[in-house]
Each structure stands twice: as structure tokens, then as C-alpha cells.
Length: 178
Image (cartoon, rainbow, N blue to C red; front, side):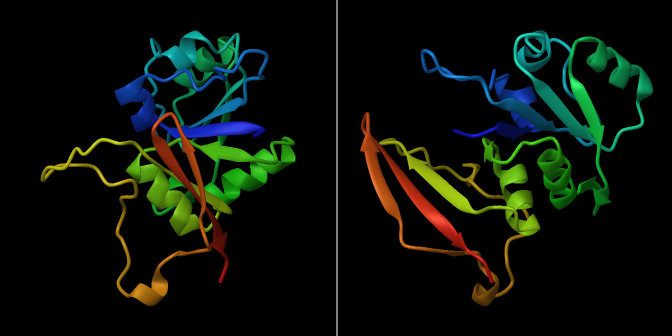
């Protein structure tokens, strides 16, 4: 369904995902990792499986040694413009579009989620709710970042489509562009 799947380097470091299709007969999306400083561990599943699943790392780094090492494993390392010390996500989307990557599923933690909303590059938002309560003072929210100063600055979502499966709930919203 999607040409690519994007995650941040923190997700790679903390969760060590594969970001490949688990559906029998399905195709793997192109894996796109946002890694401003090229911190991706060389022993991560993403790096170890780069020969089997097309992988792109977007970076600002000038670490030519690590870049060459990653490229020797089949990873496409691309440099993006910088915005506020991080990858310029709008610029990254333009680069990916030129590579014929026309749709990207963002499977991210709160840092990248905040960044994609701030960049205004989201068309559809899916929120998954599992029948589990975690709570706690240090519980992570789905979206981090600076937040908003006024409610008028909030990202507006359309009417949700609700899907139930395996005890989970998915809320799917179109993002209303201002």
C-alpha cells in the first residue's frame, strides 16, 4: 500500500525493528530512517538486513567513514537540508518524491511524530488504541515536541473512521490543511 515506511533513529535504537511486511505474499516498503547524526547501530536489524530490504538513511552528518560503511551494505544515505538543527522533513519528502516514493507510512515515536506535524507533511493520521492502560508520570505521549501555545494552532482532524480488530481500535483521520 505504501511505497515507504519511516522511523526515527531513536525507534531503531530502542526497539530494533525490521520495518518489513509481515503479510504473506506482501511486499516490503522502502525503509527510511531519519538519523541526523548517523547514530544508527551497525548491529541493528535495519543495517543487518539492508541487502534484503531497500533502506534509505536521511542525515545531516558529514561522517564519510560511516556513510561509506553503510553504503557498502546497500544502504542509500542521503543528505537533506537542515532545519532547526534537524532533518528538513519537507525537503526529505521532495527528495523521496523524486525517487518515486509517493507515499510513506510513519511508524515513529513522539519526537518524529511531532516533527512531521510541525513540517505539515501529514495527510492521514491513524491512532491505535490497545485495551491496556499504562499511565504513570513518565508515560510517553504519542506526540512530543513543543506543543502549541493556542488551540487555534492545533492540527485539525476530520471525522474519524473507526476500525476494530483483534481487540484493538484504530481511529483514522484526514488532516485538514489550513
